[in-house]
Image (cartoon, rainbow, N blue to C red; front, side):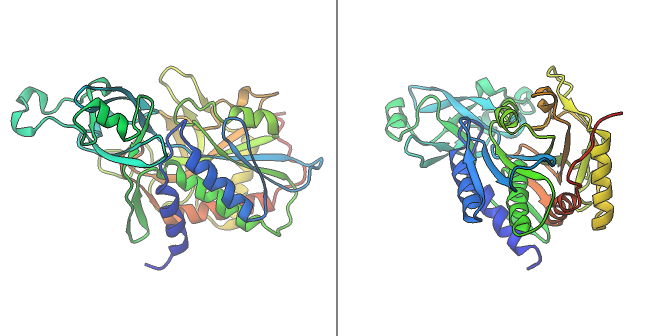
Length: 363
């Protein structure tokens, strides 16, 4: 049980921080202070992206490695005269699991008010309604108030953010927690920072904790524009299909880091990534050198911070790598600590073995 204890403690600390899109201040502060504690140059841009830079500017390749700091959530749309909160979604939070969920509402002073998503009493629910998914506009949150004035007196108002209540469970090497998407990625960034200290490597490296990925994926774009990297790596969860209800891919918990060979949203945005083939080949070489088994993945139905980087500057070649996760966007997501450890090691080996100038031209 003590194996991966340090990773567990770090992930527990990260997932305990409520940080929905647009309200990432607690995570911005955390990532910035952790970076500075390592003695690494760090800055926070106008949108809130935390940018850590390694290595003196050189004529070698410039790399941007990204992990988003935000999570899905909700926002207060209306306060009823009886003290209930009507809400809208922040990002892809699934209505089908919300009824009865325990939530945290952020008050104006930064404290959190506990509440639940209300659910009609089972005893008085018509049979025709028992299997119905209630749309977000019909849901409400109960924080124990009986009037709008009482709600306001707690510091909760229209525009207050809401997240899942915090919890953390570990069984063996598997953990369950809200916001593993993408605090696991943030953990990878922080551990990579630590491993690269006092190491020799050729490229100039920028590690970026990004904002608003779950909202519209655009938060990272100004950082990419400013850094102007030669290529980018997005670290995020990869949907694990090893549960009884999924068999779309062979990605599984404990199977090792995941490399997306293709991703596409498929729901109107036309966003996605087909990685630069030379970049994909470099990662496969790194996995062989590190003796780490990677899982190749085709991801249809989601996006990452890399999805629109190809439109920045003269085009930024990108690749998505990550770790498997079950139950994404629910109150308790799940991952395997060994997958995260191996992902950190894979990135370290990749960076330490890169040539000074990486040729990614497709010719």
